[in-house]
Length: 288
Image (cartoon, rainbow, N blue to C red; front, side, top):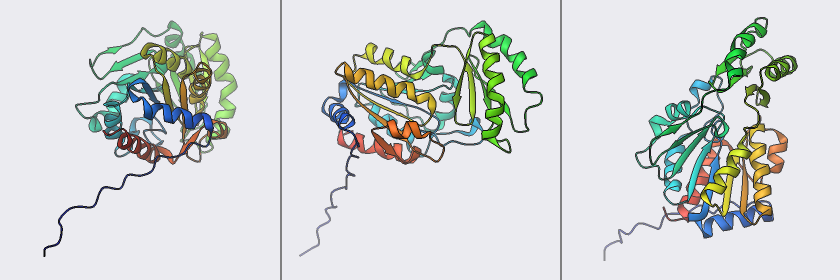
């Protein structure tokens, strides 16, 4: 008698349980009718670990593969980020597969868009105030602490203080003057984790999410993020729930995550690695 060579069945990790009834209902709606679902994910801190230099923020291991799997089964998967589209495409290039299904990248909070199915990028011209702000910002930061830097996103300018000796104190000291400067140039100052973004007013992740959900006729949403800029998207999920659309909010946790975001989330996962695991589990449940 010979030993059986049949391999044991693969172990499928259990689906995480949201801590709210609304989140549980949203997850159930997604799993029941994935073709009508919208999954919208932040990039930095959610799909990619936070790093000292924004140019080094590549996706967590397995992140793009997991996105590819889920995007082939769910109605719409989108990365909604404050980053420019071309930067996200560059950072993810090494990990992107040829088949990303219906993946979208909405850059600059929805001002820019890339569609994996067509490979096309759409982008408006920047507001005039961004151009005039570049010179004024350089002058305003002449005496800023060493380590302060400016990221030019073409449609917005971001002041980074992560590499200063005391990032929190530096940001607190610079914020009032930078906020006034943004307003003078027709822009708004939006805070983030050790950054202040000077950007066009009226564009945030909540607005981008509402527009995309309406465009795609989504009946359920999963929205994940890790910073203040994701709060408008969480608020949009609350509004869409009230209209009968299922929704679940996910916090990609880390020591730097604002407590308000962690408290608002229906589900908390362990940073980008935890986000990858969640996507893999959902893909397994959906049979992809």
